[in-house]
Image 1: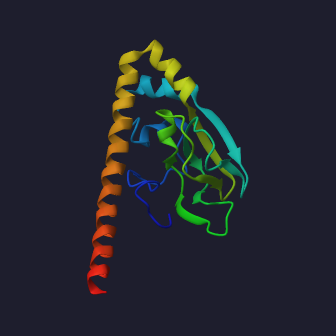
Image 2: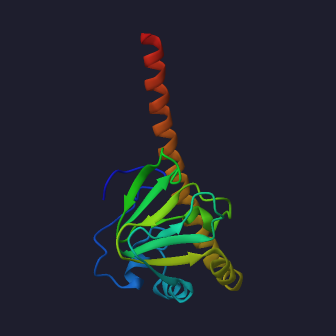
Length: 177
């Protein structure tokens, strides 16, 4: 799947998703993995199917986040500084991977650009649809939001570990000077 990055990489990935149904793909996303069959069916009712061609932008860095995406089929690259000469590919994601989940909690600006690298079938789950469902079924909402918070905490912890390692490397370089 290319290089891994704690903010964007899917270290929750289970297995090859290429032949899986939408239901199975949702079930394998960590946010939904522990849900009952009927609860996953509820999520399945509110998803949006999006199809992208190679090099088509899914979302731009800096635009408001509206939801998360799950790759049903295809490959997506996540980039920073896409419009400058300093563009950096952060990670390549493949079938079964998910991205943009922070937008389910916060409509702040996207921290990177997502681009389809192949013909891709992307499942979109948008904040307004999800929160409408949560208003009808608050216990279900708490269950999903707690799992989402858990995933974000794991990513944050991993990012903190990476920052500590970088800090240590830089402090050693300073001592050697």
